[in-house]
Image 1 (cartoon, rainbow, N blue to C red):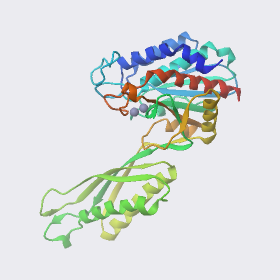
Image 2 (image 1 turned 180 degrees about the vertical axis):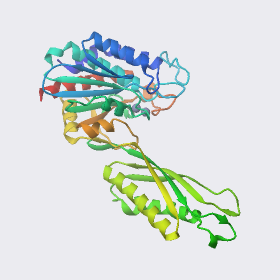
Image 3 (image 1 turned 180 degrees about the horizontal axis):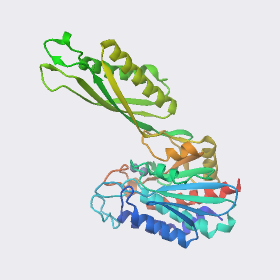
Length: 382
Ligand SMILES: [Zn+2]
Ligand SMILES: [Zn+2]
């Protein structure tokens, strides 16, 4: 079986699915219609199905090894501004990240794999997950057993900065991890004319903001990438009152868990030292939003070999500060996150992800299906 030829045969079907999903976008954890369509097809093709809310885990094949492929199905709260026949029919909702294409491409792969089930030397698990956009749907799928018995996992995302039809591949850290912090610096309020009778939290907060800048500039290896941004500062209400406390909020980004820990620890040490020096106290709350997507080198090399074997175009791509909950699968199982270029200037497909005019070059979606099928066929042979 040649995956590219097989995918090319159902090219129009993949586009038709994508358009149908595009016209009927559903937000995270509301993917009722989308998942129903996916489930009906998978059942018809002989997959064993497990429902996880609006998510689906589907298995086919027999053998020692299990390879998992993941697609996300959720749309975004965006009003579509494209004037196309397949424009979103739901006001205020739109597939502005391309998850409609992911679902369609994986459905295409599911169909081809089912038709060639007897040629498969191992098991295939398809994961159609809900709520990638901020809902961490991946965690729900993992909790429900999506990775049980899985030897490797691959995810594919259409990519607006890559030329149409080119796969983006990268070993190691690929997408950033993100965290949020909230700090309260607690002093002792009083009259603005009698600072000596207070513990003024405002100069302490000002020092904290500046000291946080030294985490990236003085503590982190210059070769590494990280961000620490204080994005909100609140304290006080009148010109002549020293407030009791000041609140700071912000975000930090990182590519490696060591850097994440370093940022979190240094923030704590700075707050501890500064407040102690001034006789104040503090609260420090860290909220982890997403982990970084770190591609397993061996699995990434495997993808590269498959891409080359089937004559697909690819590029080594740079890391990106965007985030993806695919990170959580990669923490448990080796795998890699792959991008597929869908940018086509001639067709006016140039808008970034999450933009009201975001679109994908549908002519290359079959290539995504082809790669997914190719990965399965070659992996189960190993
Ligand atoms: Zn997105
Ligand atoms: Zn996305």
